[in-house]
Length: 96
View 1 (cartoon, rainbow, N blue to C red):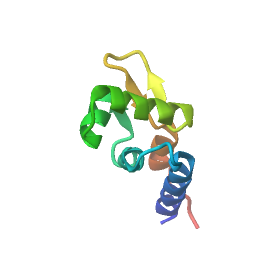
View 2 (cartoon, helix red, strand yellow; view 1 turned 90 degrees about the vertical axis):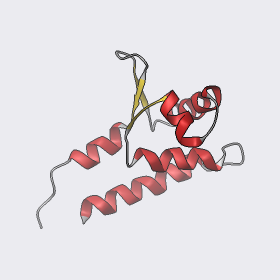
View 3 (cartoon, rainbow, N blue to C red; view 1 turned 120 degrees about the vertical axis):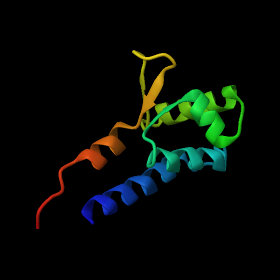
C-alpha cells in the first residue's frame, strides 16, 4: 500500500511539473503512461500521443528538462528512462 501511495504522490508531482499553459494535455498522457511503461523511445511517445515524431520528441525533451526522464544513449534508438518510477516500483516493501 505504501508503494502505491508513493507512486500516486509522484504522479501528482509530475503533473504539477508539467502542467502549464505551454504544455498540452498530451504531455500529461505521456507522464501517466510512464507509470505503466517507464522506459520509452521518441517514436513510442509519438505513437502513444498520436502526434508526429517531432512533436513526440519535443514532449520527451520537456520531460528530460523537468528531470522526469533521462536519456540512455547506449541504445539505438535512444531510450528515455523514468529512473524515479523504476526505483519506486523495484523498491523492497517496508515492513510495519
